[in-house]
Structure formats: C-alpha cells, structure tokens
Image (cartoon, helix red, strand yellow):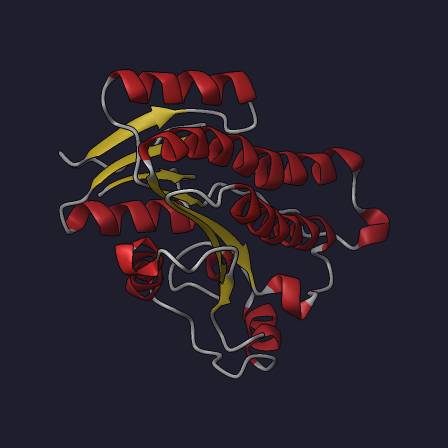
Length: 231
C-alpha cells in the first residue's frame, strides 16, 4: 500500500513514517519544515496543511505522478499548554487551524481520490486527553474532540466503495509526541488515570493502523479506538 503521513518533521508522524519505510512500504511524508528521514521508499513533501489551496495542489501533483495514497495517517498537530483563562487567542487559533483545519483539508482531498478509486483509508490521530480532560489543554483537547467528530461525520458522508474513516486515540507513545514533552509529574498524573498506563510503542500504533487499513476491515468506519484502556 501507499501511505501519506502528515507531520513527519518530528514526533509520532516521523516515527510512524520511519516504521513504515523500514518494512518496505512507500510513504509520502509532509510537514512545513521537512523531515530528516532519508530512505528510498520515502518522499518528503514540504506542505503547510493549513493552506487549503496548497493541499489541493499537492494532491494534484501526487495524482500526476501516480502516487496517490491508499492510506492517509493524519499526525500533524500542535499543542498549547495553558490554563484556559490565560490562553492567548493566537495560540488557540493556531491549534485549531492545524489540528482541525489542516486535518480536514488533507482528508478532504484524499477522500475525493479514494471515492473515485473505490478504496482508501483515512486514519485521524486523536488523544486520550479527550477522555481525561487534562487541565491546561483546553485548545488541544477541543481540537482532538473535533477531529473525532469529524471522522464520524466523514464516515457517514463516504458510504460508497471500500473507503473508511477512523480515529486512533493515542496515549503516551514511547520516545515521541506527548510523552517527550511532559514532565515526570505530568506523566504520573496521566498514568494513574489509565487502566493500561504503560507507554505504547510505535510498532503498537502501526499494528492498529494495519488493522484499520486491511481489506478485511471494510465494515469498520466512523470509530475511535483508544489506547490506554479509556473508553
């Protein structure tokens, strides 16, 4: 399968792209600043996902090169840790623009191609924060809750063919993303709220992606699957 992974400059996006190419999958990665990942199976695409015309142009280019993805994994995201009463308007708007708007623009272009081909998988990344309601994460938590609802709605709007839209709600991922940015005390506070508190590995996330990407998962759409044991 061909994959498109957003947010490959760092964190979970970069780790997932590296895991996919290491096993021989073809991956197009995109980010604003570019990725350090170098592999014959990897193509790096400089793209600001919040720029809707640029996203449409990027997909037109992929179509011309016969590189449209079968599976899109939407990792691009930013966070802003701040109590709500002190959250700046600029930071709040940036989080929503990237985490919600950027995810939507990429998913929309991908779905247009997938509906024509009759096959495709959209996989949004959300967070256990939408269930733990972590203090100081009002913008991030709201953005990820919106992503979950967007996935359910898009699944309803794309009922034709073998095209699915699902979401993975990640807990702490070893060596990437949320886990790398938290203090030991913040990590402890999250862990005590989880039935399965241990950080998850990148291969574990890839396993979930493989499950949703498989042809046998055609009937699974509009779902959010959480790690860590939260419901």
